[in-house]
Amino acid sequence: MDKTRILGFSLPLLLAAAIPAGSAEPAPPPPAAAPPAAADGKASALFTNTVVARGKGVEVTRALLDDEIIRLKAQLAGRGQTLPPAQLATLDRQVLDQLIQIQLIKAKATAADKAAGKALAEKRFEEAKARVGSEEAFNRQLKLMNSTGEEVLARWTDSLTAENVLKRELKVNITDADAKTFYEDNPAHFEQPEMVRASHILLTTLDPKTGVEMTDEQKAAKRKQMEGLLKRARDGEDFAKLAREFSEDPGSKDKGGEYTFPRGQMVPEFETAAFGLKTNQVSDIVTTRYGYHIIKLLEKIPAHKIELAKVAEEIKDNLAQQALLKQLPDYVAKLRAEAGVEILDEKLKAMEPPASPEAPPARPATK
Image (cartoon, rainbow, N blue to C red; front, side):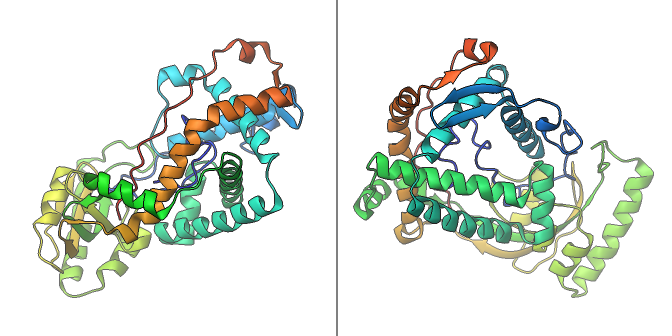
């Protein structure tokens, strides 16, 4: 569950440039970043600061709007995702409405709201870095998303500050009893399937720049290298150290090649091999569409129900999100009217505003 998404709605990456914690599947080399729009990666280098929307305490320029759109597309490209055509057609208007919304809500923030938002954003920022495994890996993923740590932290601070404002203004207060009721009424949400914790080393057979399959000669060289690594692993060398040094999976190498996953998330060949191992056993060479792997099983985790104490805060966060999303459209409409917000760009003004999204189900992420 992304805890920094309160203003994300249909474009969750706009405000919360969430750092992925590592794909649930061994990943190919990272995709090429989206081509920059300008030398500094900012639309402001190309466009003038024409104001496209204005109101009391609100001003959105064309440069700001285009910067956000470029950043959003780069973030999606970094995750290998694209927007649906219907959403892409009204992207400018959706992003504009969210920028207006952000400014309106931020104007209501107290010093206490800002301090609490900043403190929580910094805490979650450090947690995100820890999940990725290293500062280098964290910065690499930021680069793929055409962002910086400072930008991400600023966005998370804005998002969490806005959430504090909304909880106060809309009088949302989720109790421990509310969380317990949801937990008891939705037992299936908290059933965690059998999982394994395993490390792997990947030598990819895909060209790192193009993603095209390598030649037979190149693949043979990779296979021979993997045979050497397999021997070293089975001779007792530190598997995690080998993964950090040799693995070509950017999603896990900095964590010693480690993933924790249930059935159904990995490519079939990888999953079959991992679930078939005994604890501390190293697999034979496993071939997938990504290349050659060797896998070491670290732990088998039996299916179980997650305890309420471990998910209570996540349930409360999600229930608060639902409550806020239900009230938000009317609240923002009121703020826009009070601020006299006008869209000055005729093309943007003519676009149909996006429909208000429904609140997502309050299902916390399993751990």
